[in-house]
Image (cartoon, rainbow, N blue to C red; front, side):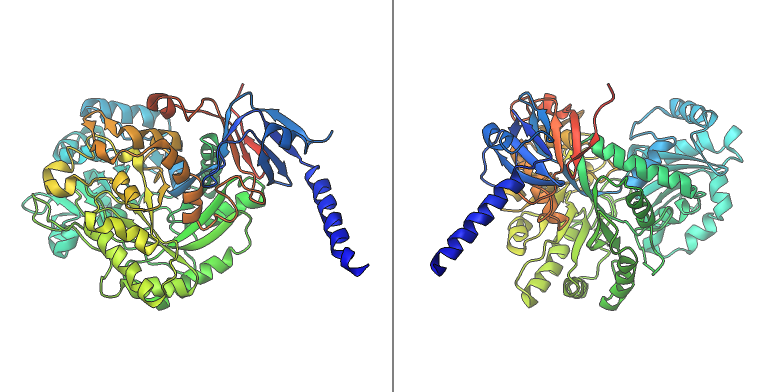
Length: 580
């Protein structure tokens, strides 16, 4: 009699399991379902229960799990996918910029620029206190710093402070009225250390021309009057809404503890460095955080292991906030590639300056910081644009692997130039390539502001997505919003075409859309350290789902670029649908 007990128990368990599966809250059927589970073909339908995936399979399998209380959605052949995941973004700052005067990287002739700024000011969009503040300004303007001064340092602008904030987050321009307020003059510029003086555009006599980069730019923009708490909460709410609109249900906030005006280039955290974290907490408390936020805490590139305790205390302060996690830290290895900034750390010197940019991390000790982070169970996410910055970041990760062979899902973002010697090291070290492939285009940023200044060899490996992929690197999709659009469909299409107004940027680095679908789902979930919870449609994972308006597996790249999301679900609940 006893030997039959396990069988009876198994039967009971199986029966109770069937009963549980029969109570699906939501079934979506008659579609083309991409699960992002490796090796799994497209399926037809998905069942959801209590906000989690119950089962994926055929229409017959899934509709059998519905009862009279189940919501049924006929996909009518539409594509259904996991929610998109952005592995590097600054959405609250981006949404705040969108609330005011924002050029969105558009380059206008200077007379038209002035007229547009006047119109924005008259419409009430451009003021931060008494400063006229313009966001989203293209780096292409900085070559015209002298002409900007001739236009914006006289007449109505003689006493009116004006600040143009570069869309790259690393550069900007201020007129003389603003410089006077900040007491920035030739004497100050002359007194700066040579390295810092390079961050200030100036004449031969050290008179500043208004252009600033990196830490000197941070000091200028920190003096723009800060917005109110109400405005910032509005921005945080808008950030969630915009992401959900594009089907994005999770992101890595790559500088969550930095506030408005904080210097990112040489940021030093304190126990009160909360940045946008209180905004995420407030949205969560109001039930409005319909996304997973993996919040990275930025730390100074020269931080020592003991300095991480400050960040641990910040994480502790926000422990338990729904949908908010803390995977680790963010470190700047260098700056930007484009002229006139050229603060990216490169192997071969820039042709104009014969300098190698600026490496912010200390190669002799950076590995020790990685080890210290790993001991706390944290990943390290690197900003690395130049090929030397990428190499030294990987060297730090390699140092950690020598002490502990088990890889951590560290990641390097941007990767504008990568030396071919580094390609296989990503797989060897388990480092994720977080790439903004919307930037892989022939335009001013990659051609006019880079090509004349770097070696021909290095230029061949600009945003080398295919080379990294072929070498076995895991690629995760990212936007770096507000530097570029948070729309993943634009980036997925661009990754394939790599075409822009100035031609195709190294066509051999094109990467297929199927790879990019994984880049924005399961791979990005791994970068966020949330792949056990999200990133694919597997039983037990959270039901973050999107329904698309076209067959993204068959349409042309141009049509793929314009993909629209019809519905977004977060934990099984609809959080976005276009207004009818």
